[in-house]
Image (cartoon, rainbow, N blue to C red; front, side, top):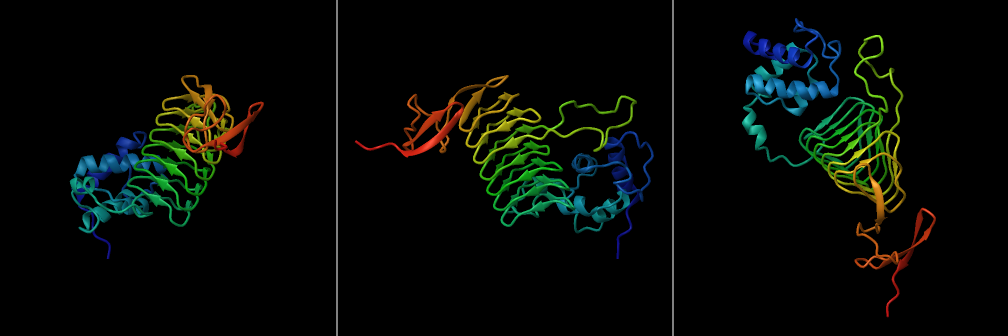
Length: 288
């Protein structure tokens, strides 16, 4: 039997809805979140607003399953899902798909782990044995390969990320080349009001912490984007780029270390040859 929501708790939940969606000044308790225009990111904001207003933790499963403000209130007031939010801060749960949010219509492969508040949006696909850090977001249309690491609070908007790539904490992979909140006639933009220009990250590449990759850019296999870089143009395979705007300053080995002038790696002893803007791995450095 569904619990009856308390008027006080319901009022706080409705207040949180107004905070997230101020255009709905008088939301009804039985109005679907979808009809209130609340997308996946709005639900994240709603969870924070409800926790601040009530002192109760909104668990990942409750936020994913609740359909209306009244439904969310019932789930919090029945005594099984709502608990003091301080307990949530000290949770020791192991990472799993139950620790983050896997939206309806999203796919996560076998062995993929979602840390607390990580989210895979509807229409996104993540492969096997990948790790999504706390608070990271994988947006609709994204295609993430196998054994990929996405760090805390990184945002992947529609990108294709190939196998074994690493997206470090705080990275932004963008896809809208002309971002506006509304159309020229003042209407709020929706999914059909812009053209996607997704980023592509090739196999084994690393995007350093806090870096920003502009829409449509391709990062080559095993390339390395330095922390804080702003990448506005394609990066070749094994390229090392730094700065704002990012410029190539060298080459990196498959193992992640910078190559010497002779295009060999002093760490793992691999050696490369260059053909224009492409590097080809020749094998280990000869002994002797």
